[in-house]
Image (tube, rainbow, N blue to C red):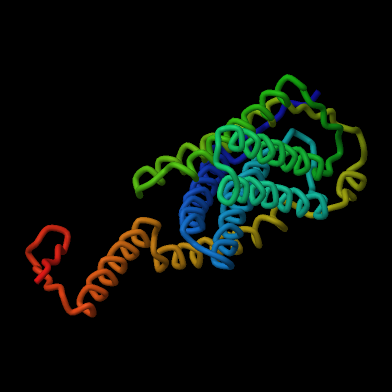
Length: 283
């Protein structure tokens, strides 16, 4: 059994992975808060953006960046691109299902637990699909106690994230929730990885370099560019879009103006600017 290195580049990969998870979670929370107040196609757009932000950026990208730091002495690692892409789609799709369930359907505790379980199992499936995408001159083994713990963490973390989406309000609370989500996602990943082992195969150098798949750098560079562009664009969209609180305030002001306009058209109301709540007096 080979000695496993989870931090081949020191704390660069776990630190960067956590930062990406935090940013994805933060943008996802902001997007889904707008989905709650949106209607029609706009609501679906925000739900899709939330699923991509949390599922792709906050979960899958965190997972892959952390995987770059995984290694074992004398073991060459490459990645099957089909399974790698499939793992990204799994994370995004299952997060999308969870967001849809808690946003559009019944928001009871039972529904929240069901949505969290479905989403968590999908996230765990993403993790182990990503692990299965590894092509190396060795054999991977798993400690199923760690697998079970990782799955439980995924379900609990997903349920907590969906609860936060429904209940967290305000900028500071949203940032705090995103920080906690980043810790939860990172914990699930590293617990799962701690249960892995590698049994190296013996072979010639030529055999070791003949592994199929893409190298980590082949995926990491375009992934970094895509994440940067997506995050910047989404941040701009979120900043320029009204928050749930701003929408509620606008609706309140509009309703008050409509009431005053209706009263004025009746010809029997006068508005007193200093009166509480815009009270109008009958003549």
